[in-house]
Image 1: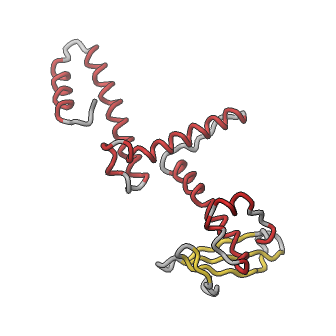
Image 2: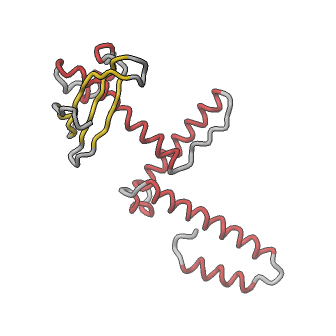
Image 3: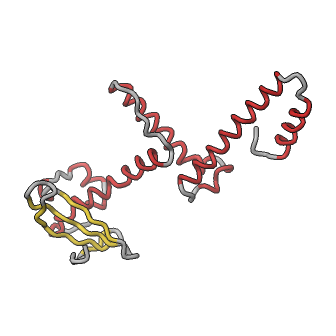
Length: 192
């Protein structure tokens, strides 16, 4: 990756392109791209598509990222299109890795579509929560792990307190238990 000439600036990254012969996708020539961030981190990207075969239609009209390259930079269009897709990939990765929303156990297409829509709705709601509820505002710039941890802790606490209350109501002498529960409830403003 260090042999690439990084001759083009794409959204703050230096990018290089070369056609290479590979055995990864059969014995064929493919387009290889190397991007380098300002911190020096490099990524390698392969495209088996010929850039001139790409159809820009709707994307060409809607996104400036696809219009800002001169015609002689057509070779960079696969990388530019992948950059548009990257936000979606990040979204799915976050849903699976940090929110555990990856357990698809439904077999029919209609059920799978409903499940995917539900997962996306839940994920979007969780992403908006720090901006809509002042209690969660401190998580606006936090990692998804921190928000998930906080929400998980709140849910576990609610379940614990609910179970404790139901046990206290059925106990023969719940006085000490009820007093401890009242102290816990009055000592925090987070429990409803």
